[in-house]
Length: 202
Image 1 (tube, rainbow, N blue to C red):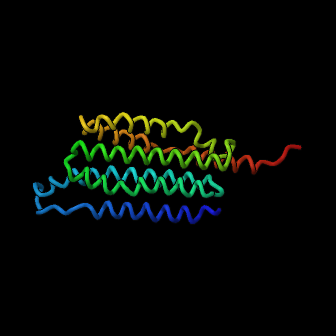
Image 2: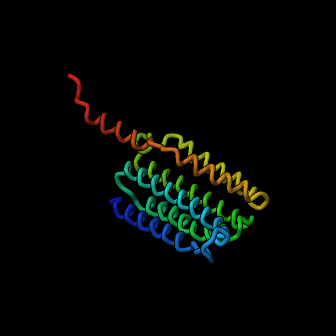
Image 3: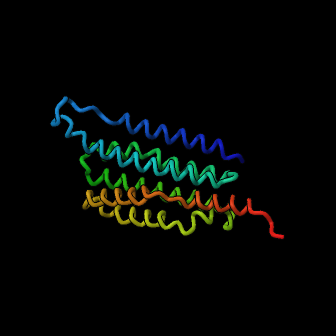
């Protein structure tokens, strides 16, 4: 199957997710600093969620640069990822409007964890189709960042009901880890093009 429709659909869903998140932001009831103060938690939560959604879009884009074709399993794995991402506006609004209460913070972390697992499942499905010796498999390698992210989310979950601000700090740490540019797929694809372009020896 052609991959273009999957990419276009995914881009559209992610754009809608961001739109819904920003529409959940409420204007301050006033024009002075005191009126702005109550919306700061919602705004900061929105910024964090925007960063996470942007990271997923960026990684998804790079991931599919190394993909040639897709099959039914990959379509469902991609929809699985989009499902959990589509819940980010809900938990963002809940956490931001609760002053970082334990329940919403824990729910936020659970959605992030399940989205990370869904992304991992998608990468495994893609490698299963393209092979362990494909440029995609070489680029992903051991996927240390992905595994570390899942571990951090798992550690944050039991902290959410007890120390929600510590759990939030872990979410921020995961975002920072992924904000560091990761050029594995770009490098792998460039190497692949270089090898194909090399002339045969005499």
